[in-house]
Amino acid sequence: MPDLRFVIPRQDINREDFASSAPDFNRRSEMMNTDRGFKCRITNIVRLTEHEKLFQLRIVDPLERTIFRFKPGQFLMLELPGYGDVPISISSSCTNHEFLELCIRKAGHVTSALFTVEEGASVAIRGPFGSSFPMDEMAGHNVFLIAGGLGIAPLRAPLFWINEHRDRFLDINLLYGAKEPSQLLFTWQFEEWEMINHIRLHTIVEHGDAAWRDKRGKTGMITNLFDDISVDVKNSYAIVCGPPIMFKFVCGYLDKLGIPMNRMFVSLERRMHCGMGKCCRCMVGSTFTCIDGPVFDYWSVMNLKEAI
Image (cartoon, rainbow, N blue to C red):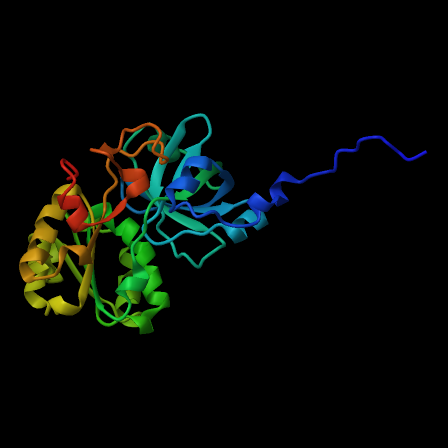
């Protein structure tokens, strides 16, 4: 007699087909059908200022760690058990599969709770989500990376990309401004960016202290930095990250110089909450910042009512 018993084959959900490759979260169709999380452990915490910390996360599962992929400009949803989740821009290299870096400002319920955790704490991430900076399109051109305050955090990913593909780009200028010298982030990397990666760094603050003046640091608006820079408008791209009010001044200035609006890219993190277009909090007209963005060219932003 044949054995007619029905046997359910043993399955390992962590090794199923859907878990063996990285889904393309940059496509709306896949994002709407995927709500997958990765368990992580906080391996290091660096205090940058009174209100900002740099968190280093490592995905616990080795296979998931290998397949996790993101592009410069994308974000993820960071969940702290018991408190909720929050959208955070990824601030590390796309090619580093050992850990992720997130620069977080203490600003709300979840981020305030994050500031109390210690190394070794368990968190979870979902994503990556959103659009990205067109790094391949920028290859062969000059690139202006312009950041205000915390805007340097999402700019680190394209900075790492350029550093790792430096021979594909022409002149790279990093313009970074803050209200005060103490609010400048990642100052320990300034020399590396300049000396090793041949990136021309320009910094400015609105209000300088005595030490800043002793170093002959510049004060004023970030657009003042262009006074000492030669701009080839026909062969340049720009990435702008910072508070929304900054986009009008910086992108407006670049527009007057002659750089086309479709060659300026901004990261627009407007009231994002769920990261998947379900809560509708980030809607601008019919556009979802979390799905259609957060990266937009400035021409698109200009045509989004109340986007900035």
